[in-house]
Length: 367
Image 1 (cartoon, rainbow, N blue to C red):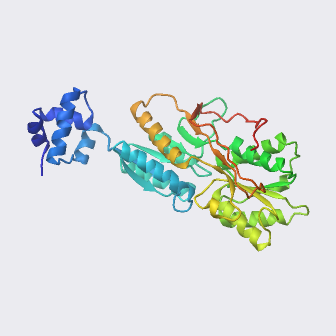
Image 2: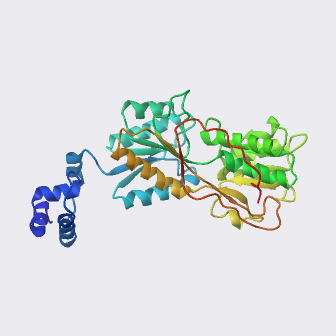
Image 3: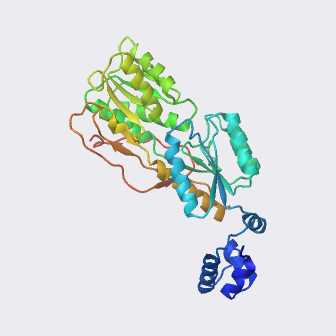
């Protein structure tokens, strides 16, 4: 097996220079660096990762804690994280916190004990123990998908990457209102999650923009899961004056809502209109095809990696929140007979780590 000394002889440099190239501990002239890389390739040299970590105090590994097993939405995010991690020459350690606060802290602690350089984590509805651990041990971290609100004038100490939630949800509501619906129900997510709060806020803003009075009976938590959404939809349909349209706040709850509608013998959109937050691979295979808000799942994962690597390169810079735009995918479950498409602006928008200012959908948001 070739050694570092063999690489040095082949490249005509010192062992120290090879070490600097491998560990990025000191600048090396471009032609010298290339000679070392060519020698590594020619000899098939494999660096000793453990020895490198002892020199650099880095393992070139990243920990990811998301509930990818229980929540298919996070599967696509995981794919984005994995691709970006490999692109930058890092390895990935994955743990599933099952959206449980205590288990969440434990798996992040295990990742930290494995000496990962930093972690990416989608916080649970009660992330206090997690945030306390990250802060106490100064773990470089990016909070993914679900943000943690700042308190008062104090910004969040953590970098955060998430999608826009408020305006896209408002757009679903105003679209349904524009089709003549006056009682629009919301199957909301798990209380305590920032995504739930922001989508409920968007629902309320959509009603206000459409001039519809709020009715708290039309907001029922589905707890971000199919079974909960099935029960929530049944409760909405049991109201004295049931809704004529539904908005479901994630993909799992869309499945639960459809089950409840089938049980009641209601067809979509003739019996009731349906729009959903979260597009998914088979959404256009349903009959009718589902009108949805599509989140940039893979891009969220890749952006979280980029932000974490920037944090590792500059530990002292201020924390920030990056929000990516969503896309309104216009199909037929809303009751429209002709299909179209409207796409959110491309690119990212970076905002300070402070509570979100209200967003009000303006005119022209209907497609």
